[in-house]
Structure formats: structure tokens, C-alpha cells
Amino acid sequence: MNKITDNPRNVTKPLNICSDFHLGRHFFGLVGGFLVGLSVTLPHEIVQKIKILSKMKTMKLWRIAFVMLAAFSLASCSSDEPRYADPEAHEKTVQLNEKYAPLMVGTWHYEKIGERHRYFERLTFKDDGTFTGFRKWQCRELVTIDGKEQYTDWQNAGQPTGWGDEEGPMNGTFTGTWQLRYWNPEGEGSTKRNCLQLEAKYDEERKYMAYSYVATFDYADKTTLRFQGYYAKDKDGWVNFQRGDAEASF
Image 1: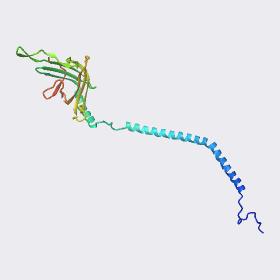
Image 2: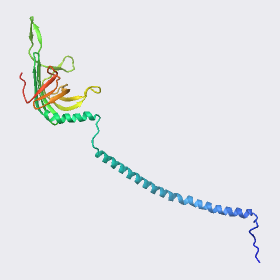
Image 3: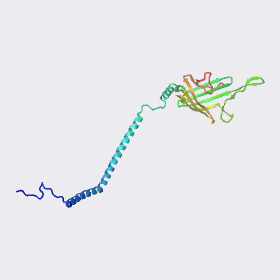
Image 4: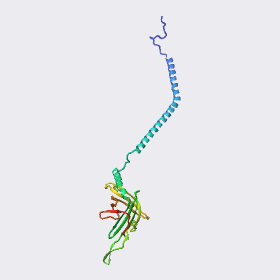
């Protein structure tokens, strides 16, 4: 004979509010204590893990930065060609110097004598981009005396100094720099061309330049240097320097 249990499966046990309440309180007490324990122990572990992860992340970022810097440096060093603002002008300047710079090196002289002006200049160009020069320039005036026209004596030419009518001497020796360039010295909108740039000061202290001039350059060969004249020029506007050392004939 089967023993009858206190709570057969087909019988619903009445709700015991007091016992269930104490059971729930006990359960949540255990959970609460566990959570309280977590609140005390986990932050330290989390902080340690965060520190480790931060260090790993920082090291990784440094490695990435180093690799990028190395790649950038390598790319910069291995660049095929430098970039120029005007590649065409740069290329033609290189070609101009390759063709004419070696021929420029040496001593040249030029002399022009007219009725009212006589001019002599000697230039010595060096391969380091410097040059020296000597200039002798004299002029005279045609005047009328007692109804007759006659020339005054030759006088050394002068240059306005900026102080009233005072003029400074144009004769003497000077030293400066030279370069051949393909460019437009007048700025944007002007025509690019082959140029000879001359910058020079008198060896004696003066308040003005012996040369501060960008001349249109034509050519140089074994005997002749030809560029656009400034102080003196031939009828076509050019000056033709002859190779070799010389002294003024006057």
C-alpha cells in the first residue's frame, strides 16, 4: 500500500506568506552581499586592467606613429624629383646654364666711343657665381661760345645720388654676383626669357650700386658675350663684349 505523502502531486500547497517572505529576504540578502562584495573588490582589478590596456594601447600608438614617421621619411628621401613652383622655368634655367655658364667664365671687355660719350667696361666672371669689374665712363657737352659750337672737356660721368643735384662717380672697380636664369623679371603677365642678372657694389663705399640689373641674355661663345645694354649700348640695344683682358683706349 502506497504511503500517502504530505503533499501529493495533485494537491496544491497553500501559500505560506511568512515562509516565502523570509526565503526571498534570505535570497536577496545573499545576492546583495555578493554585489556588495563586488563593489569592494572589482574596482581595483578593473583599474589594474585599465592601466594595462592603456599601456598596451599607448605602446601600440607609438609603434604606429614610429612606422608612419619612418615611412614618411623614406618617401621624402626617395622622392625622384623636387617640386618647383615653375617646372618649365627651372628646366630651361638648367639648360641655359649647362650651355652657357662655362662659356661665361673668364674676362670680357667692351668699349664704345662717340662724340659725346666714351665708355669702357671690363668684367671677369667666375664659376662660383661671383664677378669683378671695372668701368670708365666720360662725357662732354656741345656748347656755343662766341657764336661757335664746340665741345667741353671730357668729364667723368656721374650718377644721381638722391640728394638734390649731387652726382656720384660712375668710374671704378666693383664686385658682385651673377647668374643666368629663364624667368620674367617684370612679374606675372610679362614674357619669360633668358636673363643675365648682375648685382654689384663699388669697392669704394658708395650709396648706390655699380650694377643692379637684369639684362636680356642673347648668347656667349669663345669670342663674344652678348646681352642687352644698360649704361651703354649699340644701336640695336645690345652690347657685345669681347673675350680677353684689355684697358681703355682713352
